[in-house]
Image (cartoon, rainbow, N blue to C red; front, side):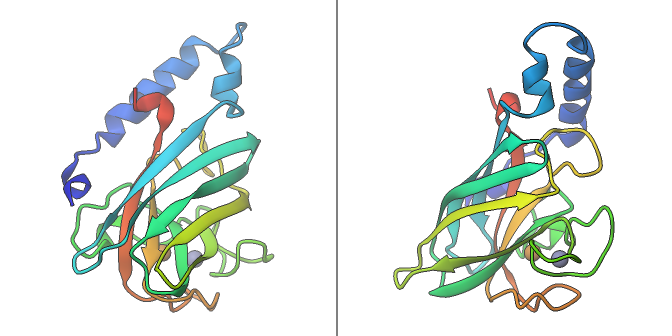
Length: 190
Ligand SMILES: [Cu+2]
Ligand SMILES: [Zn+2]
């Protein structure tokens, strides 16, 4: 779909963000935005080649490094589908492989988001109903949508997989990538 061909000037965005944050470091209420409480991000999921999966996920950081992910994904096969934050904010390749591997700035083994040992980008599974629709409503700790710091998922990507994530290392056997979307700060979308 069209979204796959959008260009993502990541380097430029990061530069602009850093400048914005520097500009408001001291007083003023704007620091609340820089801290993350007011921030939201969005990932518009586009189908990979041969897939008809699409959807939109919203990210809201109610508390520092506690991120609520919500939205609807359609076009899935019924049942569970692994989904993860992948390291590159790039969904341009037809198979989604341009998104790279799981986001894991502190390493570790692949696992469930609540487990002691897991990649920071491991989000578990979404569950599609008989019509192929999944309502996503998960809260994940350890990541931030702020655009700075090693735990930042900003300008990275969300990948939905064809199969269930069984939480085995290294990637949960979740199979091909059926949809991909870059996680973009809503502040940068205006
Ligand atoms: Cu993945
Ligand atoms: Zn993983």
